[in-house]
Length: 265
Image (tube, rainbow, N blue to C red; front, side):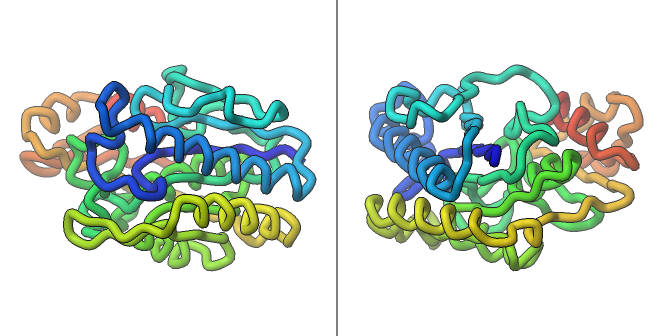
C-alpha cells in the first residue's frame, strides 16, 4: 500500500494567529513542531495499517516547515515548491492507493476559523460550479484526476463539516473550532494519538468508498480583494472579467483548471 500525505499548518492543533504560521516569526517554531508530530502520527498510522511507501508533501507557505529528522525512516518528504500545477499535492499520481490531508482548514469566507482562506490570502473566494470551495476540495479533485481517494482529513471543525457534505465516508478529525478570532483546541498530545488511530482504522477499512467524483465540466470564479489583480489576470487565456474584482474560467479538463490556478492564485 502506497500512501500520500499533504500537510498544511493553519489546521494544526493550537494554531490561532497568522504569526504562528510564518517561518522566521518568534511564534512559529512550536507550531511547526506540532505540524511535524501530526504528520508523523498520520505516517505511523498508515504504516501500522500496512503501508510500505509513504510520501509527504509539505504544503504550507515556504513548504519548509516539517522537520524530516522527526519523521520515520520509511517516509519520503517533498519540501519547497516545484512549480507544477498539482501544487499542494505535487508528486501525487495513480501509483498511490490513498491520500491523507493533515492540518487543513476552512475555506475563505466561511467564518469557521480566524485563518480561513483558499489558496492565497489575497483572494476573497473561489467557486467551482457555483459552490464555494476550500483547498480540501481543490486538492481532492486533483487526487481524483489520478483515481486516488482522499480518505482522511484533519483540521478545524468547519472543514470537517464541509468534508462530510462532500462525502460522509471520508474520515475526519477536528483538532479545534474557530470562534471569531479565537480557536478552542484539544490537547496536542490527544490530537497526535487520535490522528494515528483514525488513520490506521480508516486504511484497514474499505476506503474506496471515499472517492470524490470529478464533475464533467468546471465553471470557476475567482474573486480578489484588489480589482487591479482581477483586471491583470483577466488576460490569461480563456479567462473573462466578471466584475471589478472577479474573473471566470471554464474548462472540461480539471488539469487545465489547476494550471490556471498555478498562474492566477
